[in-house]
Image (cartoon, rainbow, N blue to C red):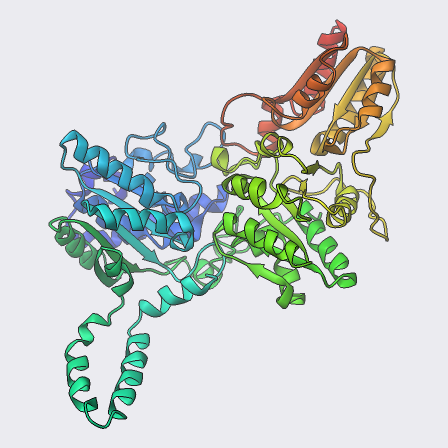
Amino acid sequence: MSILEKIDRPSDLKLIKKELLPELAKEIRDLMIRTTSKTGGHLAASLGTVELTIALHYVLECPEDKIVWDVGHQSYTHKILTGRGKRFDSLRQLNGISGFPNPEESKYDAFVSGHSSTAISAALGYVCARDLSGNNNRVVAVVGDGSMTAGLAFEGLNNAGHISKDLTVILNDNEMFISHRIGALSSLLAKLMTLGVVKKLETRIEKFLKRLTFFGIGLLRTAKRLKVLLFPGMFFEELGFSYVGPIDGHDVYRLIEVLDNVKQLKGPVLVHVITKKGKGYEPAEKNPIMFHGINNFNILTGEQEGKDTIPSFTGIFSKSIMTLAKDNEKIVGITAAMPQGTGLEAFGSQYPKRFFDVGIAEQHAVTFAAGLAKGGYLPVCAIYSTFMQRALDQVIHDVCLQNLPVVFALDRAGVVGEDGPTHHGVFDIVFLRMIPNMVVMAPKDENELQNMLKTAIYAGCPCTLRYPRGKVVGVKLDKTITKLPIGKAEMLADGEDVAILAIGSMVHPSLLAARQLETFGIKATVVNMRFIKPLDKEMIKKVVGYTNKIVTVEEGVLSGGFGSSISELLASDEVFIKSIGLPDKFIEYGSCSELRDKYGLNVEGIINTVNRIMGTRT
């Protein structure tokens, strides 16, 4: 019987002899590697926190004590040690366990954490609730993968240092976030976390003081006595935290000793832990970026299996912006720590002076883009739809209020599969179509994507281009990228019985559904609306002239979405409208195809809806 098989809950871990903990860490790594090789997942970050997580659960009394993860892709060991080891093979699968902490799934998960930089604020809230209730449990925030570089993390640190309550923050420093750490703050932290910067500063001070004729030597003696102030944690000490570290994050015995001692300290404490992303699996150690979030792979080689040669929408965006930027030096690219994921990595290599990775800071990215636009440039912000939610105020106040020509290229719009409810990009239609001056469009295929990108760049106003995760439809690309008339739809099929108004990824399923509906004797009009805002009112008026039965289809939430905009427009007409989209709930884990099938966002779902409207039996 393996050591891991003896553990169903953290209390079981405490019964394990300390000398067996390194072997337990190996068993946990083996389980994570075996599982993610089949399911995919956020492997590299969790490999780096195995010993740290073991130490935390060895010392703490969870679930009474709270561990808040930031971000949750570090938490696979936590899941395994808290009763989910036997179900770990269902990771990120439909009806399986989630890829991020989820309090609905386990009492040991203190807080949902799919987006970064939230842990310190949430943990401080837990601390204040504890003190107000007269309890004495410990609260720990584990911050890693560059989450400390975002503004929210420092808002939390500032407040925590100010009110000086008992809180432990663990800075898991693996020298990375999703991609390599970006920014002056990251560089400062990296320097502060080594004594090299202290020694350089000390040498400079010594040289300066020696030049002083009268008091230099005396001041030098005093400075040397005070050099204890020049240590890696001085930044956090100035914020009101007691600093502990740096500590080897893979020495489980040392971690247990330190965390045991930290439990006795009063006030806010920051424990600085050095780990290696991908620890224990050579392919992940060599390429932690690829193994940050990976599909199924060959364990022996680390190579992803079943790579699709069909390009993705992200790949088409990447090629398109490169082509357009070649002819216009004013085009600049911006991303928030996701150059690979958004397809801007090649742009950055080709045009390094026109490429800006601002780190995990979507709010800054948007306002930064507004400043670039004010300065006469044409910024393209490539951000995942789910992360764009974090910068809504900046979009409204800093971009749209001033009607600035900023393009938001929203990747992963719609369902994104196994990353689940924290990452589905299903709300952007709703929160963007409400904003004055904003143009919102969605391509039906890769050719329309490249044309829409050019349209957005030269529109002279704020524009959002949303496109899905995954491979393209497979149409031939035009050799020349052309601008589309803003707010103009296209009719793809002409029928008098029912009209299907579709947007983006739902256009081709709608067209296929219309062809199959002919076998039921139903002739359907199909319109590729192209633009969610502004709507093509002339086209909609034309469609209503054909039929009073309208079906709208969108890969987004129905409440306030594309279908709602059609209903608002036709509210005074005698028209029956049925909208197909996602319900008013957070969509679960599962592959994109499974989720689209479940919620009727496929050919069969569209056919069934039309047949119900027409009263035709299937």
